[in-house]
Length: 290
Image 1 (cartoon, rainbow, N blue to C red):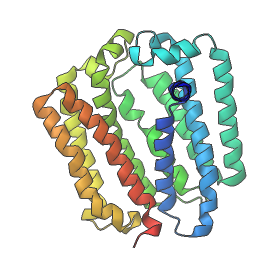
Image 2 (image 1 turned 90 degrees about the vertical axis):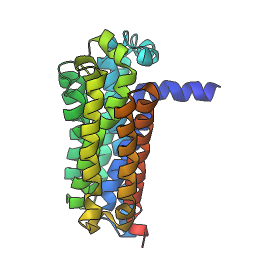
Image 3 (image 1 turned 45 degrees about the vertical axis):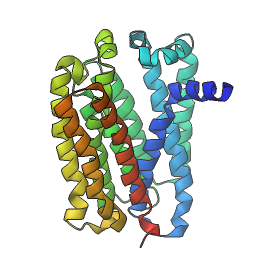
């Protein structure tokens, strides 16, 4: 269907699913401070500015990576779209970033805008340009890009960084390696051909699975901190579901470590998305729950 093809083409260019997650992280940070209905006005510019910055970062990433995309089957579609129009897409990405900045300056606090721009910069410059092709720590250090929206959301109307948003940033940071390493196992041949030093390429799949387990144990411990310490800033709903959700992601990783088969790492990747989404939704519902 034409609609499906159009959505796929746009998604290949700007990574809509990543922008959705970025927005959800920002909303989580926002609702760690806001319990006032009047503050909801700030949600609209926060989401628009955050989405535009995310789209811009993804597009710049795709333009920059055109040379290596020819070696990677999973992104071949976006390379065919971009390779003859790099200048055009660079201009589009620049316009989106400028629009994000203008909307942020007009409606959000300066601190919030700063974190939005830092999120863009950490993805484009820190991860894509500096780390991605140099070290297998790329996705670990580069994971800061996914954490910063929580701080941007917290500062959107108040200019204050809440303890809850700092926790969300830590949660997302620790979630990123488990999520992305499980995906990189699937595409290890692509990364090897493109000479991208993802962990499965430099250390092998077995060693990557071991580090997924280590990281997920740490992620488990981070996830349950609010429940164990009765940390009220994230709300009772998060505290109620945090331990079951932490077990939900840890158990498949243990199975992956024991079996080390293709089905297991696909399960870990899928559950990792569900894990973070549910926890963030629980935080966002905090002002409206008992």
